[in-house]
Image 1 (spheres, rainbow, N blue to C red):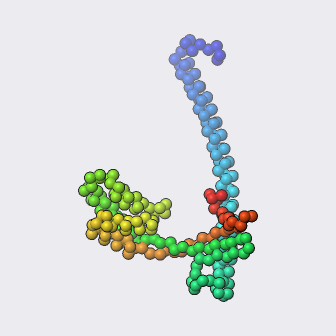
Image 2: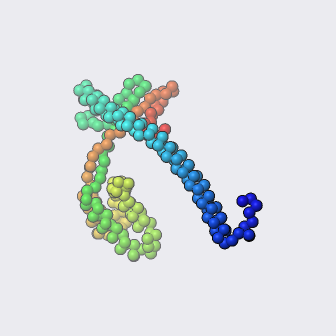
Image 3: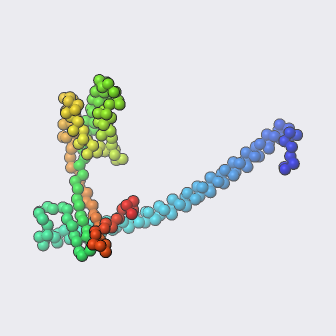
Length: 216
C-alpha cells in the first residue's frame, strides 16, 4: 500500500480505494462518537444519581422542618409568643442558631386575564400604527415585554401591575378597560412558606446556612 502508485490504478480500483478510505474514516469517527457518548452517559448518570438522591433527602428535610415549625407555632400561640393573632411570619432563635419562617401570598390571575392580554395585544398593534417610531416605540416595546409569560405559561403579577402605571401615558378608554379587566381577574391563588437558617460566626455576625445548591 505504501508503494502504491495511484496513477497506475484503474478507475474501478481508485473507486474501491476511495471507498475503503471513507469506510476507515467513518469507522474512526464512529469510534470517537461512541467514546464521547459513553463518557457523556457516565457523567450525566453519576451526577444525576447524586442529585436525585440528595433531592429526595432535601424533600424529607423540608417536610421535617415544616412539621416541626408548624407544631412549634402552636406552642408559640399557647405561650403568647406571637405579636398578633394570625401572624404567619416569625423567627425562632436559640443561642447562636436562628430559624426564620416567612409566608408569602402568591397572586395570580383567572381566565379573564387571558382575554385581557389578547385585547391588549390587539390594542397595541393598532396604537403602534399611529406611532412615528412604529414597533421601535419604547412604550410599545415595554408594554409587550410586560405581557411575557413565565415558564409555567402564566402572566407575571408584578409585570401586569406595571402596565397599570402606563394607563395615563396611553390615555385611551380601550386601554383603561383592559386594565380594569386585569384588575378584576386578579386573585390570591395560594401561599408559600420559605424557611431560612442562620448561625452566628466567631464575630457574632449571623451567617445564612444555604440549602440551595446554586447559592453555595
